[in-house]
Structures are given as structure tokens and as C-alpha cells.
Image (cartoon, rainbow, N blue to C red):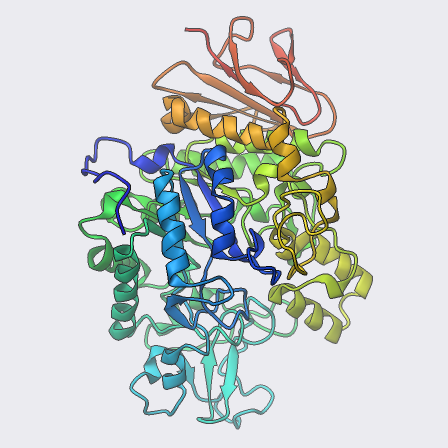
Amino acid sequence: MAEEFPVVIADHEAPAWWTSAVVYQIYPRSFQDSDGDGIGDLRGVLQRIDHLAELGVDVVWFSPVYRSPQDDNGYDISDYRDVDPIFGSLADLDEVVQALHSRGIRVVMDLVVNHTSDEHTWFMESRASTDSPKRDWYWWRPPRPGFAAGEPGAEPTNWASYFSGSTWELDPGTGEYYLHLFSRKQPDLNWENPAVRDAVYEMMRWWLDRGIDGFRMDVINLISKTMADGGALADGVVKDGLYGDAWPLTANGPRLHEYLQEMHREVFEGRREALLLVGETPGATVEDGRLFTDPARGELDMVFTFEHVGLDHGPGGRFDRRPLDLRELKATLARWQTGLKDAGWNALYWCNHDQPRIVSRFGDDGAYRRESATMLATVLHLHRGTPYVYQGEELGMTNAHFAALAEYRDIESLRYAAEARAHGRLTDDQLVEALAFGSRDNARTPVQWDDTASAGFTTGEPWLAVNPNHVTVNAEVECRDPASVFHHYRRLIALRHEDPVVRLGDFSLVAPEHPHVYAFTRSGGGPTLFVAGNFSGEPQRIGVEGVDPATAGRVIGNYDDAPRVEEAELVLRPWEAVVLRAAR
């Protein structure tokens, strides 16, 4: 495939190309269907490339399109070197990559190598017998001492899967259990085995040679297990009376950084500066983030932290809602901004395929949908880092607000509901309320292109119901309205491209204890910027720092005119956002 990008000459004094980039995530199943089967596909992506080009994004990240049984919507991969027929073919993918490259848009693929599908040939060979050459490509363990295989309590440990139930699944053929931190159809690879690592690295090189521009690495901080140190197993602390916590023995293991640095040497050496490498790292601290993203260490460019998107979760996790305390959000994001200032880089996001829609979580998806969606976008994009836009976010798409359990498709949600029902923890009404807040399906409803029956997504029956509000919230309406969420995202993306202070300026939090306004400055390399967002439906006042509001210019805002200034304070309207630039 012809390369559309210039060769990047390494210059460690110059900012990396991705410091001025904005990434757009496509969840192919829900983006655009081209053949009427109700499932989005690669030829559907070709139909919508003009939308991406008009938005102005620099990179497209594809959630998995590899061959898969689709137990977890493609995150259970049975062949890393082929495209699943529901999405098309390798030739279709090559055409999509070429079309995006021709528009100056790079392509990042999802890399899912903590686990495979149980239908991958590696695992099928591994489970064939206890003396299979690939037996130790996965984590196999005999029953707990004193128990026979299959007896209650015979699992090697009491660990809870992240998708509910046990992390261990019995293989009747060999009488041993295999580890799966997620679905039972997603057995974990044993990265302790160098043959596993070699096979993964070879596959990664194969994709880079086909012309892709980097990887988003799924749960990459789980590939080294602490349990691997001597093979020791121990029960986890029981949290809910059923299963124990697997995290301490399966995450952030002792060889994690060794593996990432080895990956750098084996896969990226010689072409590193042209690529984008982002790791999904649940549970990562700022200190972890510095280790992952310090350029001198040769690991990743940036990581997805989960701290800020867990702040509205109660003790029960994503399905247990609690009100957001804006002061906690400010403190969390500011800690990452300052912590990675001199050694590393932030990935900025509100939404992805695993997170419910941000306007329904931290905003107002009713009367102030446009205002709160654009306010949230402004606050996020004015931080230092690389912003990620999830499909439909640029349209102000909201949670689905499904009213019945039968409407859900997400495996995590369904397993949570089944377990809660089995143990009598929640009524069906309570489950509907919990899933309406926390289900990943909220992010996976089809993209709303127009007001037709299936929102322009498909001519058939969509795999997941279209949000009923597509009649008024859709791309056709958004693109016609210059004051829309879509055009506000366009302006934010252009601002990052044009303004060096937005790209690289220092971050300083303003009024950290204000309960309703998120304000900060960006400075260095040009006139100081003052950013403020009102996270409420009531007018709020905030003092201005770093700029003189009497002489400052308004860079961008989500109301037609600038907010009032009274006694050196801005009076922000409901869900208002404004960016001011100091006079030169």
C-alpha cells in the first residue's frame, strides 16, 4: 500500500506529531452498515469518510474488526490476521486505510493480546492435552487441593471475573481450569512464555507492514501477572460474599515494563516516531503513567487512565451511581496534568465503547443537551494532551435510556443482571435503572446519521436498538446548524491544530474548591488562555486569573456572546463554556 505520510525524522527536541492531533474512535459494529444486515461494516466506513474529514480529525482508531466469534463484540479474537466476515474482508480494510490516508488521516488498530478467543487455534491446541506444545501459552491450573474437578469450590482460586462469575473455567477434557479475567471465551495468554511474545510481536509487525499507523493496546497492564512469580496462587479478598478480588495478583505484574520495552525493540525500532501507541491501563496511577509514557523509557506514547470516569461510581462499581463531585474531577485531572508535565503525555477522553455517554453522566441530556455537550468538549479539549472523540460524541449523542432488560446486548451487562437476579440483590426495576446508567450499550447504539427509522445506520434491523431521540439528534441536523455540537467540535479541533498554547502550554487549576465551575489557565509559548466551564444548570460566578477580562479576546464559547463580567468575575450561564486569550 502506498504510504501517504512523509517519513518522520526523529527529533527529540521537537514535539511529537500527535501532540497536535485529535483521534476519532470508530466502533465498527455501530458506525455504518452498508449491506442491510444491521451490523456496521468497513464498506460503511467508506460511506462516512467525508464526515470524518469535515470534522478535521487526524487519526482514526478502530475497535477490533478481526475474525471473532463475537462473544464480546470482537474483543475475543480467533484470528489476528484476518477480518471477520461481518465487517468485510482484508481487501475492504486496505481500501479503508488507503482512503483515510488519502485524506491525511492515520489509522490505529486495536491490539487485544492479554487474551484471545477460546476458538483461536493457539487455545484449541493448548487445550488438546496437558502435554500439548502450546499448553503453557495460557494459564492452566489443576483443581484446588482436596477437591475433584467440577466440584463447587474446586476452582484454583476464588477470583471474580471482571464480567461476573469465576475467572476459572473447567476444561472437562483435561480436568484442569484455565484463567479468563473476562468472558470464559476469552482465555488469558501466558506472557511468561517467550514463544507467546514472539508470536504477538510477529503479528504486530505484519500489521505495521500493511500500512497501519499504531495500536491502541487493550488492558495492556494485565499482560504480566504477579501470580507468575513462582506460580503462586492465593485467594482474593472477598468483596460481595461470593468471589475474591483478582486484581492484586493479575494486574501490573513485575515484568510489565520489561515486556513493553521488549515490544519496543522487537516491533517499533526504526519506525517509532511515525506511530501512535496508546495503552488502556485500568487502575494506573500518575506514577504509573509517568513510567509508561516517559519517552526515555521506550514504552508507550500515552495511556488511558480510568480515575476520572469512575468518579460517579459507588462501591458497587459502574452500575452503582453516585452524584459527581466536580471538585474530585478537577483534582483528578489536574493531578494527571501536572504529574505528566515533564515526563509523559496525557490521553484526554470522556467517552469510548466501554463508557456511557458523557452528556448523560456529567451533563444534562435534556433541555441543555447542546450546551452541556459543548461545555464538556471545551473543558476536555483545552487540557494538555491528545483528545479522543468517540463516534457520536461530536453529535451530542446521549445514553439510550432503555426501559427493559431485553433491550440490552452487552455481555458485561447481561452477566451482571443474571448474577444479581440469581442472588436476589436487585429487583428487575432496580436492574433497569442500574443498566440505564452504567451499561456499555449506552455507547454502542448506532450512530445517528438522520431522522429515518434506523437513523440512516442501516436499511435492515439494527443489531442494537437505535436511540429514539435520533429524530432530533442526528448528523444531518447537526451539520446544518453552525451552532451545533458538531461544529463546536470542529472549532475545537482546529484550535488545537493552530494554537501552540493549546498543544503544549502549561496547565494551572483555578478555584479548585468551586463546586460548579471548572476553570484553569494554559500558558507558555503565547498569550495565556483562561478556560471556564459551568457544570450546572444555574448561573455561576468565577474569578478570572491570568488574563484581564476587560481586554481579553474570546477564543471560543458555546453561547453566541461572551459572558458578563461583574467586579472582575465572569457570570457563566447554565452549562456555559468560554475560553479567553490575554491581550498581547
